[in-house]
Length: 141
Image (tube, rainbow, N blue to C red; front, top):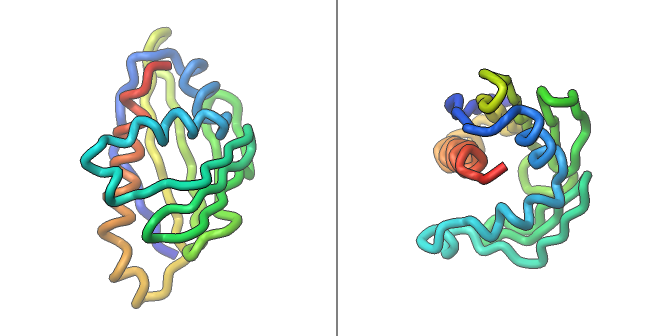
């Protein structure tokens, strides 16, 4: 098991607003539209389907992915895992209030990788986790 953690990101919105958006996976449709144009070629997202508890899509060059929420700790944490993916992942989005109008988030990913796979995907997976945390911190909540 390989654990990857993002840096802690400050968000200028209340914890309640951030939790409401990240705990509902149907909001990922909005997030997919915010992928910068220069990175869309790296991550082609097709057939995106979102519900509050699940999201599925095809990501080139990775393949078919389905992610589901497996736990919610209101206002504090959303836990998800891959239901269909080339790599078994579990991800937590942790949210901590830093005042009435701000909070911090951190993403943690546990990836079930053998040593060979870990060497191949650790760097791109670390970059993806960090970019996702940055993207989440820049959203209007």
